[in-house]
Length: 446
Image: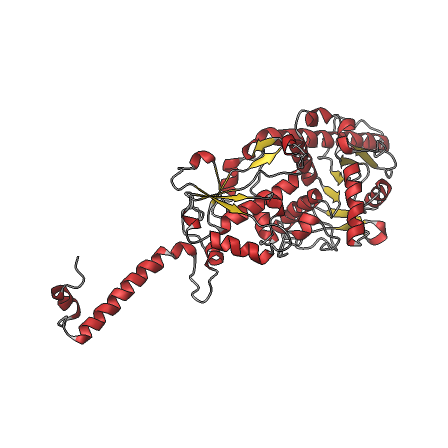
């Protein structure tokens, strides 16, 4: 169609195309036509802020596609290493980076072993051997997305993006690199492959609520979840037996066959292992903070001072047995608190058949389901459990546990509370970064 046809324009504008007025009117119409096309093309990038070059940020808030994330563009990240919860944080950071670039994250490789300095000792394990891939995409639909390498079409190749390092590589420079990668010639590549350090060590650009959104989508595969079910069932079974015996003595009748409610239990993430004590002592020296390390005796005393605990109560001790240098953790507890670790509970066989990562995943699940959880606020493991339990309380309409008894109470034994109790603990969901969870803090919300 010829837009400059004088015949058609004469009909359109009711005037001769040779007139100056008609010519101006035609130019205005053509300009508006092409502007409408351009605005439509950029609608997937959110509201265009002509006075703000940070289009990538507005684009991450309003994504115009079926699920909100492009399925034909991908981000690849290095193998994720270290402990379970460091890996979960690294994974979430990779997801949020992919979200910012409006790309699907290629399913990363996790590490089954604890070794991280010796590359030869790393035992890679696929993400979908630990967490449910389809369930993740369903729960996080429209927020972040995972893809398989089989989804690649290999049409435009791979662009290697080198992550900077050192003191000169600031948060601002890192953000600018991400912005540049989200537009221009780099964005034309099917795959952007980030080269360099583990995502846990990348600069953090996102608030706690965004990380929490990703964590909520992580569901263990059935095989691992069933192992955790067995451990929790064993703990509650022990609790019922103990309470049954107590009722028999107190009421002088056989309560074995009576229908008792599920026995509550306390989970204590007892950080007294060799590697932790070395790390926390050095951390106290560097930071000048004294409330990081806790002795076995201090932990037992403070847990025993929690007012809401009924007697008798099973106390499950989540501890890395292979790194433990103290076999006396079962002794010295307050009367009515009955401690069990894996061996005494009779579940050590469940753990032994799995690599370190899966053992941690089982323990994490056991601790997160506990009626009461007590951990260390400088432990990533403890911090992520408290974050999950905080989200449960928020969904129940509870925004603070400081002055009331709540359904999912959590405590930090390394911080002395009133009457030598452990300090009540809730995660600050409004925090602008994950620093307090990633590296620990003695400034908790209660």
